[in-house]
Length: 84
Image (cartoon, rainbow, N blue to C red; front, side, top):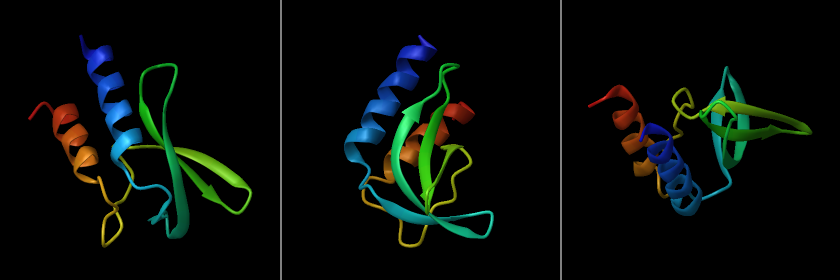
């Protein structure tokens, strides 16, 4: 079902993305330290800036140039989420 598919994507993202990596969120550089799944089933990136930690939905996370190793799993999840 959909929950199992999201869980599978979450595991693949955790295993294949090269953490940490830097990206820009709302004009501020953050370090993406990992991936998590919320209680309501959304996959989020765990971002740090100094001592502040924020979870950004992976569907909304801007990708840096060059993208991190394993970024193709983010693209695959985004395509799946769009139903393509």
